[in-house]
Length: 396
Ligand SMILES: Cc1cc2nc3c(=O)[nH]c(=O)nc-3n(C[C@H](O)[C@H](O)[C@H](O)COP(=O)(O)OP(=O)(O)OC[C@H]3O[C@@H](n4cnc5c(N)ncnc54)[C@H](O)[C@@H]3O)c2cc1C
Image (cartoon, rainbow, N blue to C red; front, side, top):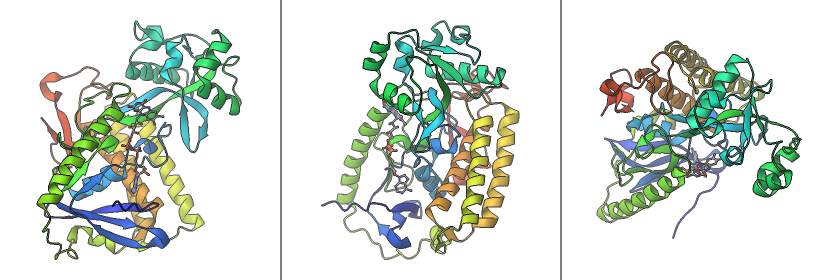
């Protein structure tokens, strides 16, 4: 028998002495529940919402990663964020950018600057068909050069009937949004797509916290290294979810006599448990929307596709400012939007922190201040924990 609680928001993990006993959850009618479990698995997805442009759904606010970080879990490789090169620019669906598949370029689509010139071949011999990170970087560089918000993806030279039959969803969605792609060029922009880092897990989906597991995009199994190959994430999610489920079942048998007598004594969660459920008023909503926009702006401009030491430092400072405004305004408030924002802030800080630690360029982390890989010093995972965040955190 499986009990599914829909429309419940996981707030925090119940952790004591590096062992997880479940989670604090915000339920219907603002009821705060403590759900006790012999094994807990986090599967909260990605983090794309912290960037101005993302292909991810709205829920991709990194809640699980932030929760695990607060609980003391090891968080790995957060600097490796994959940007999909071509999301539709200017028109969002449910707050997310619509993805124009790589197959469109495979079919012969050509990338052009805003004045119509081709450019991809300057960056790689495969031109528009180069690996994702190279095409995304080429687009970002040209956008900067032209002070443009997008580039064009041109399929107008291809057979219209073939376009319609090969890409019916893209054709129809763009048409509904006012662009006939067989006649007009498509404005595209790179968009945050996938986080290779996350809660560090072993091959059984276990984290460093006993009885706490993670799977899917929120987890870092190491399988994607510094640069995910397209289409590998669902495979990874399925594999590690099954491994974790097998291990959980084993644990449940072993833990049959678990003692929850100390269940009211989760000192780490005391602060969260004192928060009061609260509906935001219009002024609070406005402030939160402004802070979200500021966070997305700094992440997009400074911790995006092309980074620099100066930009990363700017982001670190801007995030600290955002944090102090947020803390002043929203202490003692338990509302999903506020909790989500606080998680986004933690994730943004983790990405910036990890990116600052890695003084080289590798995979999805490209820093113009250190444009080459440095195997001697950085052929390693970047691992951070709450206790180590101010220390030296790059480890094997
Ligand atoms: C447009 C697009 C196309 C893609 N195409 C491919 C592809 O072709 N091949 C491939 O391998 N990968 C692809 N990916 C990546 C892949 O889809 C994702 O990595 C994968 O779906 C993530 O699955 P998940 O189960 O980890 O998270 P999700 O599917 O995002 O699920 C997370 C769940 O957790 C819930 N949740 C989050 N926070 C909380 C909270 N605080 N409390 C309670 N619930 C919460 C959410 O509501 C959601 O239901 C694509 C991604 C995108 C965005």
